[in-house]
Length: 147
Image (cartoon, rainbow, N blue to C red; front, top):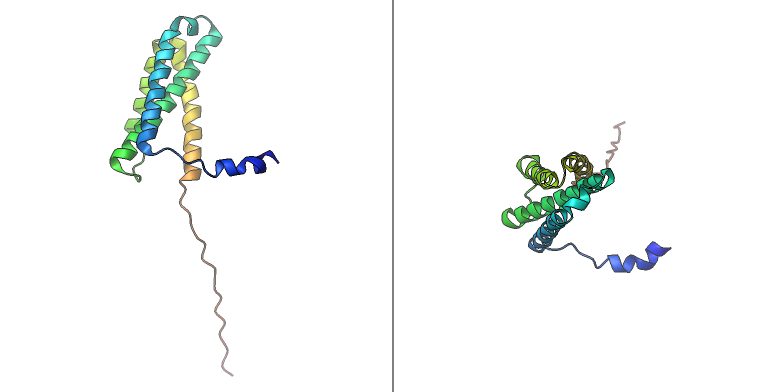
C-alpha cells in the first residue's frame, strides 16, 4: 500500500551524470577519510569501535570505487567497465591503508566488510546491466503430405 502511494516519486528519480557522481563520491571519500582521522582515538578505544572503524573503512572503499568508476566512465565512455585489477584492488588497498592509520584491527574488518560490499555491488551491477535477450518464438512449419 505504501509503495503504491509513493511510486510516483520514484519514477522521476534519475542517477547523477557520471562526472557529477564522480565529484559527489570524491567529496564523500575525503569527508570519510577526514572523519576517520578526526575520531582516530575514539575508533581505536575499544573492540566494537575498531569494528566500526573497519565498517567506515569499507564505506571509504565503496565511495572511492564509485569515484574511480565514474571518472573512468566520464573519460572512456559508458561501455568502459571497472576491472578487478587495478581499480578494485587499488581502492581496496587505499581503504585498508586508511583503516590501518586508525588501528590494525580496522584493516582486517575493513577487508571483510569490503568483500561483502563488493559482492553486493557486483550482484546489483549484474542485475542492472545484464544483457537482455528476446526469446524468438518457435514457428512450427506444417507441411501437407502429397496423396
